[in-house]
Length: 417
Image 1: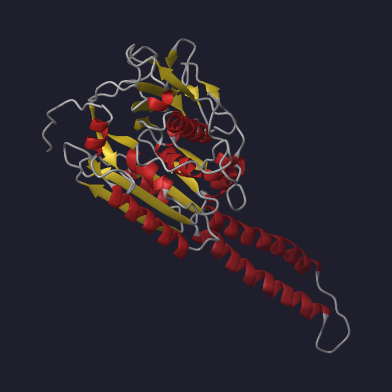
Image 2 (image 1 turned 180 degrees about the vertical axis):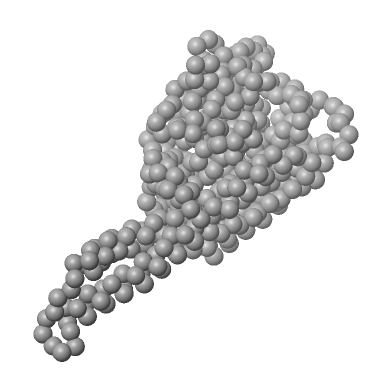
């Protein structure tokens, strides 16, 4: 089937190439942000004083033209270019560091894995905005996050509008997958925004992702792979299918991947069978999906690791997952679409933004999917719960799933400490 999604519109503003931003980052980490401003102030005073002495030598009070010693000319010739460089350095740091937005939506019982790396990174910015929600998500039933996401999107817009848009914008997201794609769907990203991924493993697996990379014309490697349906459902037309599951497996997780592409590859723990099932991932040498990593040097090194792990760019992950979801929604217009996502945190908000801004084959934005899109919250091994994260979703997702023939297995959740 023809892919129904083409490219997203060009972002407003200048596109930052990853290579250029990488060089900027290495330069700005050399000193605290106040250092270039202090050096600039000293050089302004020094250059002004030397220039005044040179002018005084050339234009003496008694009239005529005078003579200025070579060492003063030499000092001026050194201090003036240094002043220009220090002014540029100060502007460069301001434009890259700028404001940091720490965006978190997590269960209050979840461990705080990234506190140390996050503190270290945000200290390097001129301004830090904390938008943190740690919620009691309960133990059973659907997860209610629609009001939280809407409020968070409103606060982000207000913060960005009040911010100085001459500085850089950096996002440090740690948002539950369902909330992240809904937040991205309502997000109005500022010009030149960069998203940062922080991991427990430290800098080795960290990366940063300028959102403007999504405007590059590239064919993503992730595939939308259909899982063979049950024989009783095989003859049903795509536009008559009532329930669809999609598993997005674009991460590094040895407990899940590699995943053989057998009949139950699209199964979702805790839920009955779906009329159609799909997985989104990268095929390895055999008939299975492999682990995925974003190499920190992704602008120069993509392909595969020696162990078979696929190395993708962040844009490939976002566009691959976004196109797959949009294709499923377009292919099955009457179906409820249940989505389980395993992706880097820095790509989930852009996934929602991509889905909201992607265009169909006719060149028009695709219809809002939230009346039948149900992202799942991972509440623990073998425990997935439907999440209401957008106001257009029905109030009762369990009733929606039951209406479309999706059964929920009864399970006793573990006691919460």
